Image 1: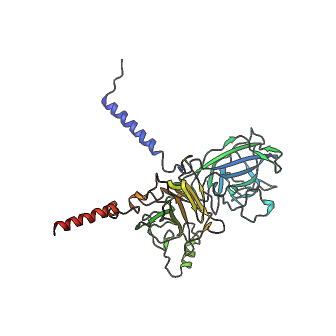
Image 2: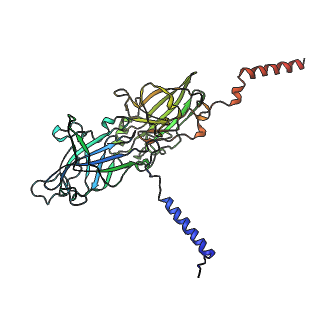
Image 3: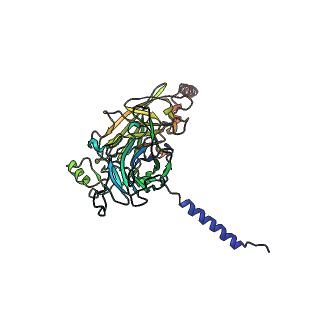
Amino acid sequence: MGFVVSPMMSLFSKFTVLLLFVLWCASFTSTEAYDPLDPTGNITIKWDIISWTADGYVAVVTIYNFQQYRHIQAPGWSLGWTWAKKEVIWSMLGGQATEQGDCSKFKGNIPHCCKKSPTVVDLLPGTPYNQQIANCCKGGVISSWAQDPANAASSFQLSVGSAGTSNKTVRLPKNFTLKAPGPGYTCARAKIVKPTRFMSTDKRRITQAWMTWNVTCTYSQFLAQKTPSCCVSLSSFYNSTIVPCPKCSCGCQRNISDSRGCVDPNAPHLASVVSSLGSNNPMPIVQCTSHMCPIRVHWHVKLNYKLYWRVKVTITNFNYNMNYTQWNLVVQHPNFDNLTQSFSFNYQSLSPYSDINDTAMLWGVKFYNDMLMQAGRSGNVQSELLFQKDKSTFTFDKGWAFPRRIYFNGDNCVMPPPDAYPWLPNASSRQLTSPLMLMIAILSALAFLYGHV
């Protein structure tokens, strides 16, 4: 006997499939960490066991920042995990656990940390040498890979007890968490990889770790903060319109008595107001503006030459609570393949799409403008960019001269809507000024006058 599908059952099946599809789509949220301008960027935590002890092992843990332009700024990273068994940390170099935990069962030597889920932070600069190892003690600050590769790693050493003493008995920690310094990073499970190889200082001998595992962490701006942290404004020499940051780009104004509020720069006793708001407040204390962003980036199309065109970029800090050290700016524009000169910013091409060179990273010159000071008279840095024209693509029409997107310190900035960009004057008004149209207008006027004489 064949099975007959009734119209009602067919409708029910279609509804079920549609419902499952909607639920499947809902599982993919905006927290995904893929960055189109840095598609392979991540933070990799490498755990190398370098020796065995009576009840465990000694390991060196290194945090590598393989992100091109997103760095870890003060107050620095904190790394957490959950032990697989009943491990303890006997001692540490280059880092420390934030809590010791309950070590009451130990009668002789007291471990450094007995917590099931410890949290480790970097030591501060100036730590005594006998507590340091290589790449430690920078207060948890790690530079981005493109900006300063020599300082794009941070390390600490720990001696682990109550653990396995061989590759077969060691159990990998679980539930790794990375705060840098706040939320935003999601870490995958630890994975055993090929043991790390170490070269001696004279480069004549190679040793290797007894065991190595990696943990990969990726960044999501949505997890880091619910609102953007920067916005973009635009202007040009050929249009008197100055396009501001979109209103409420990073939030809307609140009452100054609210800790999430803003500060009027013209208010009396400004310093006392800022200090009172910032004493126990890690949130940005921003100047009252229509956009309420801590950072504004202004792109001004300044000059037009026969073979070149010139842009002025200004970054303004509206945050009274923070200096941005080692800031960087990432700009996507099709003319970066013909950038001739950057006058007071460092420049490096990122080329996230291999052959397409339309993304540039800009950052300050060391000891000159590599620190963006907090809000006030000195709270801005600026530079000019000189581009060579490509006759096949160059135009000032339809907003082509403005960037496609801008990142500040790795966060995507809010751009004005495309229909608000400063456009060229109407084509009809330009045509009337051409010599041919002027001659036609004169001849028409003369013919009109001659016909009425």
